[in-house]
Length: 236
Image (cartoon, rainbow, N blue to C red; front, side):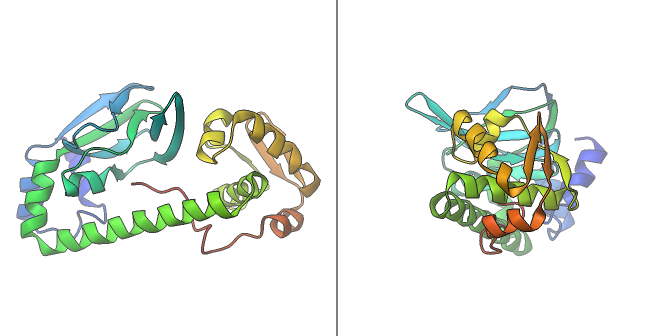
């Protein structure tokens, strides 16, 4: 594995507490691969042979059923997926595909479990990571089940605005059809929701969003720190 990838992975909170010899042993069977955009990496139901680490690019975690599909989260550098399946030696519950050209490290799941058994610091870091993922899922479920589609979109825009430093004008993270899927809407409902936010000062030009009346939008959205911590849709 290239030294640059080695250093980036070592700096992750998941791997930083490990003993050096255990990290070296863990990386011994790992390798790095470059993938073009829109390449399927894993399929739900497949055995979890590898823990993946996104070093560059972006990965969409999604699921399909009965002719329908939904995007669940976006994984960006530097971060892992899907840790829970690796630790449980269970099948993947989500599929993954690249959204853009991506560089990904693949660490054999068997090696992760072996080091988990002998390195207490690594084990505690894994528990912490899984707890963070669980809390992100709870927040996402509350967002989906307690809010209308218009409220979900309003709060998503406020979260995205904060990620962009509070600017009044900013760009969407991805194309609108995928945003609709992440927010649990159809593309048609998303279009109607954007129009529904116009009275609260939201204007849309392509992928550019402008919040013209911050106070009005916040009064309508009622952001809640028990739901809207950033990111609301985290890695799994």
